[in-house]
Length: 268
Image (cartoon, rainbow, N blue to C red; front, side):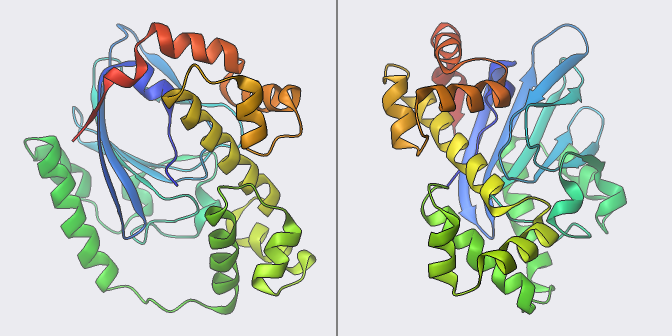
């Protein structure tokens, strides 16, 4: 399952995207913010960690997930290159665990044992070259990491897989039946490692699935979308959607129609 940040696309004049789905990486992207002043670029919940490189200044951040609509300061006119990891995946090049990045944008040099990565990325000439460089770099870093998981990490991995396989449309009872662990133990271990409950994590995945569906099918009835993505009713879906995006599904649908959203995305 791939997570999206629609405001990043809507705030740019181009948004390049390369889907890879390997080594825990979901996709690469590159965009330029078109506003003429300092831009407050909203982020929506996505259960993901991003590495974002400011190509104009040679610096980078590790950005964790937000749990409701948050904000990221980015310089207008600058070009940003980044990679989004799959939901629940903490990049092996980062110190600490997943929850330590929730709601934060951390300077990459302070959380990654490589002070030259941002500079190397910024010096490359084009999008695909940057993607290929990082893939080779990350493959080498993964080869040097310990691949075995401890007991708690194995439990979290099983829970993440169970939730992801159903796109977040899952109950804790489903997860218990699939993993064989008690609901209380799953909740405790998952929250300790991830910084949020399985229910909250699942809810973000469901929201992302609905958001992506509306992007690609803006004419679909909102009530049907709510039902398909496991919401109790349309009003419940509208409440969650507005909390996470700042607008209702109908307002969002109008916005992406007016902005010709899909045409801005260039799949490479």
